[in-house]
Image 1 (spheres, rainbow, N blue to C red):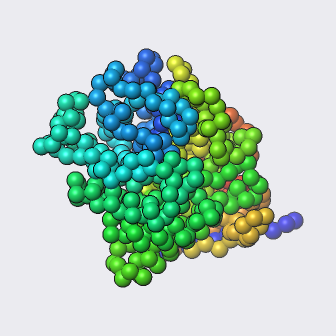
Image 2 (image 1 turned 90 degrees about the vertical axis):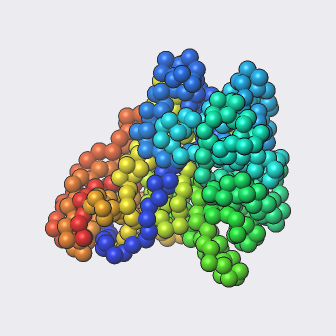
Image 3 (image 1 turned 180 degrees about the vertical axis):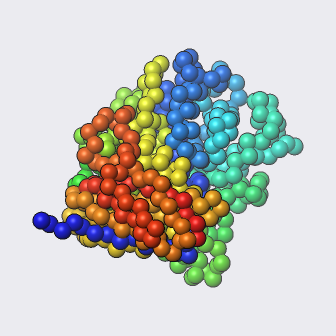
Length: 501
């Protein structure tokens, strides 16, 4: 009989990583595909509110636990004139969006989206166009959104039905400006100068805003590292965050795909090290935080990687783009990515699952029809509603997991969260391998650590994506000093506890 594989996790209240910012459980709404039109917004739908936003989608967004929503792009923003989306809807122009080769009627703009976000308890995160526009337009947008009054631009907002400021706190200085696909693509030096000037102008309008500089579009970009170094040096005095974008391809080798969480952790570590090296070189006390403002998995059910999809269709309004159904395997990998994010909670302060509805999204809709949960909905919602307080540095030993491309990574990944105020705690664990692993959790350092429940989802779950949920873990043995969880093969598990130090 083969001995069962073992992993060991030590949990200690003093092994502290940092405070968990609720904004790590954010998402992203872009004018791409059907994310906006027939996604969040569909006048005439049976559930639509007076403003035309779908109530069934809003209910699922609330269930998902989303905290912040980035808008309006994405690649879309680099060719977008925000003034096209304000004022009387009937007077707004229809434009050709070059990013996704789509017709944009501008029925939804900032004066529709921002109130929707506020009504539903979502903090908006706005992006400014630094592709075909620049500092002047960016500053005017901040003025339109945030200035109480006294100027023509603030008066314009009031005349458009919004006398009170929209009060947007967080702003992205463009999007993926290192990418040749981006309208207005440029070099790191030119982007850094442009972003610094835009940020300076925006802060002169509202000194209380925080700013996100563009990092590399992908980890494998040929300019990765050098881009971050140059941009950090040029924007350190104005930018609070360096952005990261990370997508993991479900059509790749299965073992490489299952190692995605470890790959994300390495990516975060590299970006943080680069930004901190710049601070050290400049003798600056400032430390840039990380805004992981685009991240997701691409469906393992897709015929091929969706890179480049969105430009190969006839020009139309709200075309269907990357609406492949997610599988249970994708949910396991997405849960593993959440573990990686939690393990860097000291530096990752914003995270935006990309996108929110229809386009590689946790929520799917049909025009005039229903809204449903995708498989990846479930681990995100479970973590968003349980990861509170502080992330703990869980000391883990685990067997090695061999991958074709990324070498050996730990077969088990784990993250632990603890809220000292309430005693609420959670243990998140992934088994990336094809054999079960017995995970022993040593929680003796706590005066009490009472695991109340443990639930899991597995890649082998054959239920339809809409029916997929976390199920009770079959072999789960809580104890006074330590507890054991038998992690199924290729699984993601959440154990909820009450912990008192």
